[in-house]
Length: 331
Ligand code: AHN
Ligand code: ZN
Image: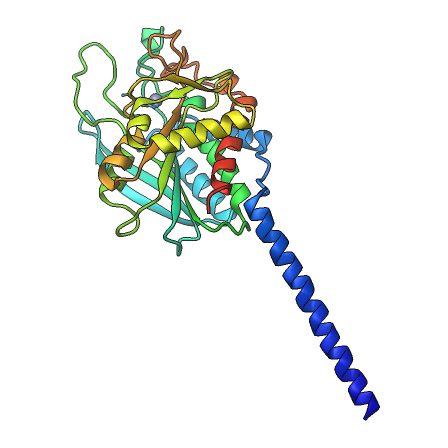
């Protein structure tokens, strides 16, 4: 009898001890949520290598073998980082009536949650170098290290950091295709409306899920140039002023205020415009603004100089760490 009583006491006290440790961890975890969240470390070398791998395929122009090979790489990479991947095949018409076999690559984290954030970039590269000084090479496709690969590289590194993380929100990472097939600036080419951003236009009209919605979206475009500055783009300010404020303030707090400057930029027709237009998701564009060049996008924009030499780990880090900080502070 005594033995039984003893065993009973031991069991009860063990159960209590177990409960109290549980209570302790959950209250300290709660506290942690309110004060400091563990935001993962964005590894700039890793992001850089994701940019390099894309560039190593060569230009990623729709309807080419290199384009298909890179699409496979991107969807495999997202899958390996724990995302539920959908490759949306889209037939879209280019400015010159070419039928493009485009692929929007969609990586979903916690697809069951309604509260979501959308991160996106374009993964295709421009079929022309219409801003290159050498006229004889203007009809050749560009490598798009900054214009294309940089945004995707940053998002792949973010995806790597999302695996096995228990965020209270869902995240979608979309790599849009056929962004950069817009009417060329050659003499004689005729302007046509809505010839850029063909992949995001298609997705906006045919989202991968019925009634798809996200709290907000962040587009990364040309986020790798050395000493890039990201001005507050005007459509972003119009569509999603609070998101601009949150992102720029976060960057400043992390010490990246030299990249995220408070000057206003231009109005840029980019994928965020169509996500706003068709799905009413407030979106911003983090895009390089360089007022010292004619294009405002930097001297290598749409030229054969858009190579790895013009991609800098520090810029990738500033953008990637800022976006990670923003999404890990959502709840
Ligand atoms: C226009 O030049 C109309 N929009 C810029 C979008 C873009 C092109 N982003 C990268 N390449
Ligand atoms: Zn471009």
